[in-house]
Length: 582
Image 1 (cartoon, rainbow, N blue to C red):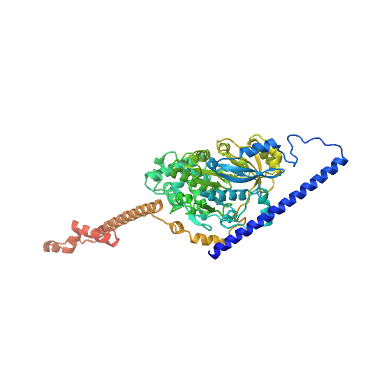
Image 2: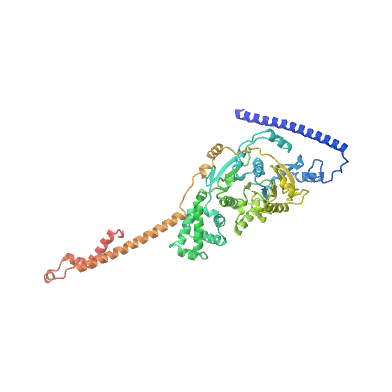
């Protein structure tokens, strides 16, 4: 037995011992509270009038559900197949006997994790990710704030943690998940993720550039022209050079033949693209393009690899971040085969800060999202949108989400109160006063309803969620960097490649045109100089005298005045100007 293995086993045993002690302490506290409650009730019964019997809708422990409603929830979440454990029902106190779950086979019916800032959405995401990985399901998630990186480090035990987990029936053991780190364009810690402009496409690029419908349509025609002209669009400078060509003197006729594109529209697209490039977006586009199947890997031990995308500058480029994730989904949709209903997803995709995706989105872009969400389920991919309120997600997309995990909402403003009422209307009927419950949930608690194994919604359940087994603090940067440097993917995607594409082809074409103009100008200049010399020679030619006439004339002068002599003069002049044909 190695020292490392012995150390880990000792830590696990210590954690189990601490949990047993916490459970014993919790039981002791519960017994003390029950005795105190009994003593108080007895005293009140002696000094006060007899109280009315508790109603059927009110339990003795103060919870909002009666025994029948609790039994319905317990039955509604008792699935036969594998399931992700969410936590325990809360009815006044946590009911460890009533566990809330999500059937693993229904995770590809998508879901929503919502709630105000600081209510525990990221930890819920971490809990689900850990269990999916343990079940052999790969996960892709964007780590917006860096908090999710703790999944790669075993968690730290504490009395408070073990008391909480024991109260909801969770046997907590510190555990790390296998993680691969990625970064958009290599900005940050991770294997670089890049895409070509051609594969990104005009619809997604229009969303990033903030183009209107007319400009988006024009950009689509420009992409079509590039394809016909065999001008590969790899990075932003390729598209920028193509737009410069089409709006310049050389490409005016080409732009006219495209039809439906004005030079003003092309100029607007060029300005937006230039500004986008100036923001540092060039690094996100290029080759080698990431193969999205890298996100479907499983370890030799059968655990799903968790792919974490570090996005340190999301506040500066929110549209690029959200649209890039949408491109990943669209690429997966194109690559993966149809699998139908399977016992577990092939990949689960967590879309954090989802409101950024839908902000200022065009109709075509929203239609593309709805189609992807609706159809990618049959490819075995599940999508969870993570945001603050369900209102952040369009109704057509919200209608496709089978699982709902709603953390606390705050209603301190009229708009927030309106959002609260709208959220309540999206839930099935229940015994809860959801407007009151949603504003009183504690950190780490949520209202949950999922899709059962038959495809029907489960009862709405106030749930105290499980604690992550990985660290609740971010993994240290040094550990992340070591993991990146040791990754087998770094040699494949680490260095950018700049092959011949539209930029180089158009530059060569422009240079050839400029050289042809220079050659033509040089030929014209040589011809003019030859004509000048010829004229000057004629003027300087001496008139024939009787003597010269009788002696046959001057041989040199006669030759220069002949056609052969004039041709030689022109040839010599062209040679001087570097324009003589070889």
